[in-house]
Image 1 (cartoon, rainbow, N blue to C red):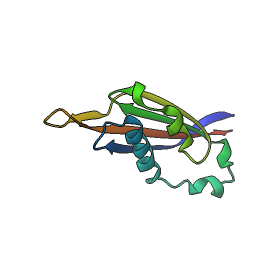
Image 2: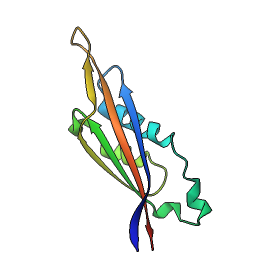
Image 3: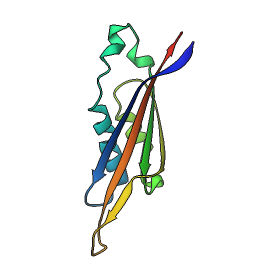
Image 4: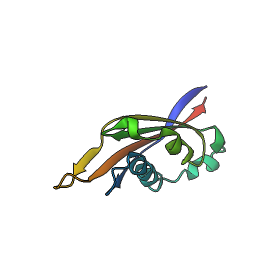
Length: 113
């Protein structure tokens, strides 16, 4: 058996005020999830609980993302989350606030013969 990539989906999320990197990451994941339907899983008899889900998040301050909150936001599968430098921070002109933009890539793999 070998893990085979079945889905690769992308999303973008933001926190427009407050600079909350976890909020932006969660919104990016939800954006990616809302662009996907895994109807093939049941159609070909796979167990959705056994899928391997790898989430990659990109933000300017990776250490500010609560990866566990991101992990538990996914409804199925064995989920892993990695966070790296990416995304974008857009400061307010007066410097007192910033918009945080996060990107997410979700990869779904199944162990297939």
